[in-house]
Length: 229
Image (tube, rainbow, N blue to C red; front, side, top):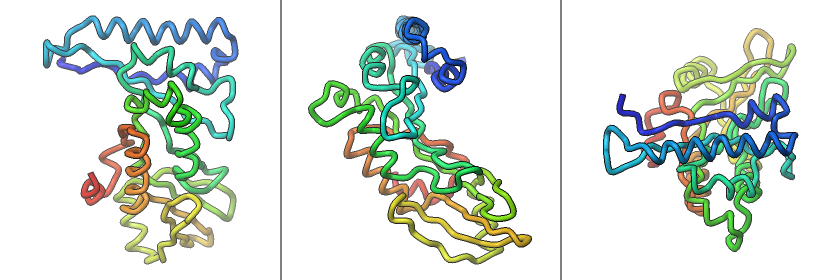
């Protein structure tokens, strides 16, 4: 089929099923990823015989100020680094219907990178080029009254809400995200959606660390987002 490799997401499932709480099971999980990466590296790409197949591993950022036992941390990064071509860091979905708020607060992104890579003198920081910083092209429409609810919206939904409600866009300095409030059927909604300013600040953060990008996902954004790249 001419594929370049595999993007694997398993860490969050292993955490949910308690695999990462057991040291032996955690080590076996890491060995599985490592062996998979090494196996892919031994196979040439059909598209380019001079290249090997790649393994991109998806990891979740911590939602607290300290790494938990189930979080992917610097030691895991070091152990897998030689066998993995890139780590897709899911720095989005910070908020949800039961905790409405910004999608990817900049201070949380910065904290997640620091916990994973340390400072400029740490061994893990040398792996920053393998980190693909997650940037969301979708947004969220949360219900603030009449019970909590709501969920993800794409660019088309966002434009429709702007045209219908003509809200005032607000800037949240703490999260570095734009949002607006509107009412529908006697319920107040808060909409957080990426803007050129919010994306630009996250691009700057990735450049400062020497990291790459992982976008979720391209078809969900607005066309002019690509003016920044």
